[in-house]
Image (cartoon, rainbow, N blue to C red):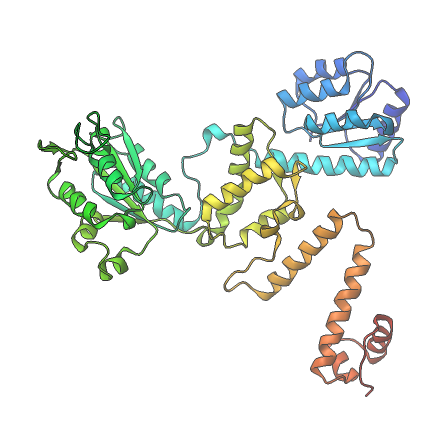
Length: 467
């Protein structure tokens, strides 16, 4: 591990830190100015940087900015007097990990440094260069099947039907199929068939001739012409109006179509990839989707798993989306605690990957600190996850962890004693209810002596029937 750097023009402050870190076995380097620290930065960054704000020459804020610009993963702790709160705020806005008010308690300062060291280690382990991230992320077995399908289809121009719940990433898979096909040099054109009325959709798909209808003042090429030689992605195909289903079937059958209001037959050299979140078989049975079109589309089917079917991918996706949001907004990426990652992995995410991405964007914008705990999540994500088949033990432990997070976030003290009393009170009350108030039987169920349960009943104010 690299050393901790201490930057302060006050020799006595540096001496205090040096002695404290030596006692803890933590390597350090000391600097009397920001300039000295910046000169040393060429030899590599520290594990953690502690800097005073007000120093002769360059300030601690300027040092923070330059360190963060070159090494954004390095936690920076700034020291400031109570009267210098505005500078502390500026430091947080510049990406400081924490600020240490002067005068400070040495033990608390060392504990803060230890937390920053742990944070630094986790940050380095989690960093993933965005430029090297694959187009679709997933390590779960269900996603490996999708990757295999994309690979097998790389040399084919067969029609593909992609199925999966909303938000699972069907268009991403369609784009990957195009990118790994022999049509990659030609256009990829996408259209959501449920997003527009029938008349407009017909014109969008097939184009129209000048004067074909009121407002058609010029010839327009439709999506089939725009995608010539490439791939046309028809999203939400299950909602396509019946009249257009007939026209689409004609294109898939013989590769020809007419513009709206046109008389010249046009050839379509286009690979069609369709997608739906609906059960097309049931829509065929209900008479709202053509059976022959269904079979034309369902040449090769690729099913995208829901996020609850690939929970092991949630931490990987969450880190990626946080990094992506931070890059888009030109801010430093937030970091999810292990508790949050475990908590999210137990959630069902009905909106799937899109919902997780939206959550990560919300956290990038709205979460106050760099390290995100459960208390930082939006209210709808802080509740106990409801998972079919989830073990009861995991349920109550997760609930306990959330309660601890909430209390610590509010700055409460004595949390262990408070929760322990509530825990014991609940256990004893339930055991007494089970035994009809008979203390000896309740004590046996709980594995404690009669004298112990009697004492705790009195201490905790629990009523019971004497044996």
